[in-house]
Image 1 (cartoon, rainbow, N blue to C red):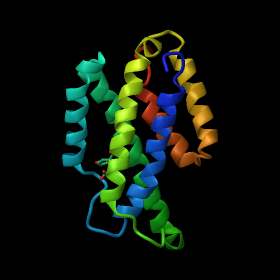
Image 2 (image 1 turned 60 degrees about the horizontal axis):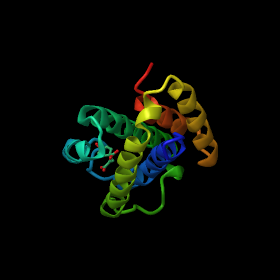
Image 3 (image 1 turned 135 degrees about the vertical axis):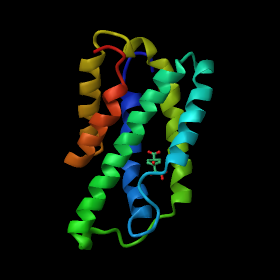
Image 4 (image 1 turned 30 degrees about the vertical axis):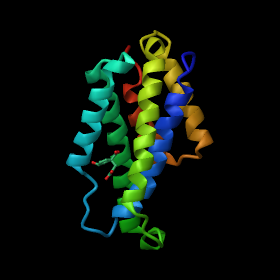
Length: 162
Ligand SMILES: O=C(O)C(=O)C[C@]1(C(=O)O)C=C[C@@H](O)C=C1
């Protein structure tokens, strides 16, 4: 909605949370955490859809770069955790092919929210609102320190002000 960063931040939090499944899909397989081809597909799609939503393509791509960096923060953190504590490795490996369509839907929602929060993102109150929304999402999603840090990264491109 136009009056809150909550929906944008909650979608970013859902994207951070799904990184657990991405990590579980890749851990112990030859697939690396970084997939530059998939990333470029996301950036190209975002840049192509931005103008019809009234968004600056470069700003939209910058926002999604932060979402993907946040996802990788979680994946790397979980890899380190699972290397150190093999008993915590998920027992079943989800299929990445089933996770990416969910990420695609989150990306679409994020892009829509990015457009509807444009005035708020440019406002002087944005940095404070961003922190409040992220703190609320941390609680709602019961995030641990790793995911709190990742959501901080994800929301680092929320505000157009400094
Ligand atoms: O789809 C994947 O393979 C992911 O790891 C997810 C994701 C993303 O955040 O969208 C993150 C890292 C990869 O470089 C590509 C995409």
